[in-house]
Image 1 (cartoon, rainbow, N blue to C red):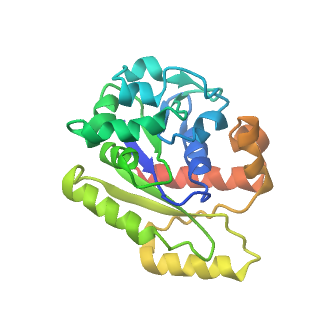
Image 2 (cartoon, rainbow, N blue to C red):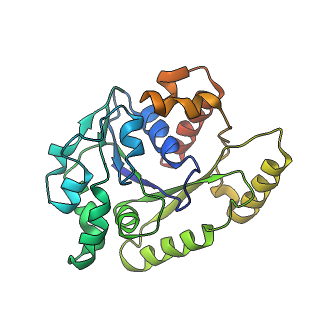
Length: 252
């Protein structure tokens, strides 16, 4: 299998970005498939969401800021064949330090070149700064989680402009893999309106799988578990299992 790198991006917080990155990565990891999740967010939510202490070292900062080997910084998770490059608040300093570095947009891309994982998912920070640019430059594909709420499309135009700018400068092969509608509530007419608006805008790039509002999904990170470990029969688990199949199909 040719390695596939997917950046999970939305500069708005609270859209289910990290939940999506964790659970797709976990679902795709199996005996034949090795997956790496790169936590590129200084908040370190993907790290704590997979029960890795934020005090763990080395981290993403060690790789980006101190040129540590990525192979020395990855950590095994409780999920078979899933590894994580963890992050903590130190990573915020990398955003500033990268400004004066040559080839600053390519630091993560160069670090990932030594890896042999089948899939790499990059959980980008909720911003469009240099860390996110590094994630987009390193990736083959972009996956955009969008919440089924009133302001769903607000800010998306800025994100799409950033993706176009990356294509024009540092990564011409970057492709939009899909848009995932999260926090969907079928009882709410607004969710359906948002779905139709996003479908009109993105067409077949909108994933068919809808991620529902689900208490079990919201609980899982506080236990350091994927939704499949926390409650494999929940609506959230069934939805992410279906989404992982869809993403795998889109990746070929």
